[in-house]
Image 1 (cartoon, rainbow, N blue to C red):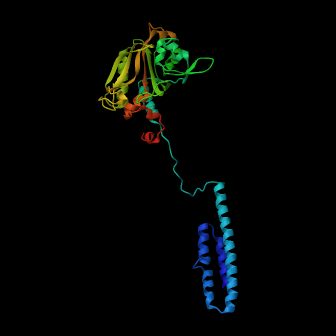
Image 2 (image 1 turned 135 degrees about the horizontal axis):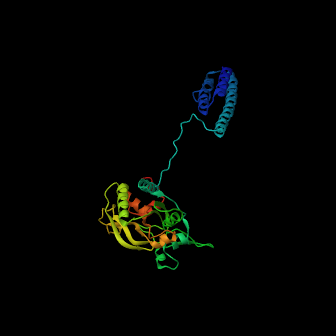
Image 3 (image 1 turned 180 degrees about the vertical axis):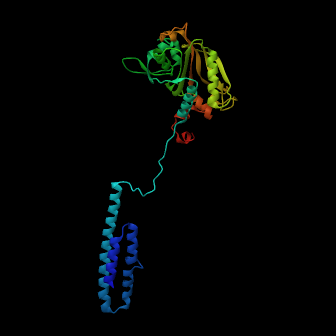
Length: 336
């Protein structure tokens, strides 16, 4: 009987391909109700001589099978590890990868590009590290001009005065240097200013520069373009306000504000309780700017604007604090 159990057990141990199968074989032979365990429990019914002989043989078999179980367990475990190192088990169900998504500011920037692109505006780009000439001088803000104080500038150390651009307006200078009017462009990108942050101001922000140059271009053209843009962007009628302002690179200049959509014009921290939120500045391009680009201001006229993309995103999604866009908080960003 013991020889028969030994043969069956050894064959089953060799044929076991997984640890689960091996555990089942162990229970069949060495478990509490296993075949060898039943033999050991039946020894009490034998004579003293037979009990001594069969007890010794049974215990030797138990020890032998235990060793073989351990050896087979090591073989299976090593084989599993080797399979993992060789490659991927294609039979295992795949795990869906976690996918990221565009930030709300990128989504808004792309919407702006699509809308202006539909109105015939070309999208251009410019460097974030800028020369003093493009950021200030060519925009009618010469060295030591008091207007420079309005742009809290991050200057970079080096032989040539370089800076982090304070607005996207340098892009229009670079474009006008290489292209003849008529022209219409927008330039979305990041700007940097060393200023205090609050619910509607950040040290780094996204801005979209717009420029239209041609013969007979007037502020009326700008008003029509901006009105169409706002209606397409917000998909509703928007109250827009133009108030006189001063910018060295435009004359006349005006501030563009819209009714705050967060509080419906009633007043909140985002609009400083005025019911209006500034979207950006605009005006007719100053003749000195055209002159810096070697364009004849007696023939060509145009307007330019700079809108805050962050501000537009605040109004579109009714976000009451601009700093949330740059917080990196996934609880906020995953909503978009």
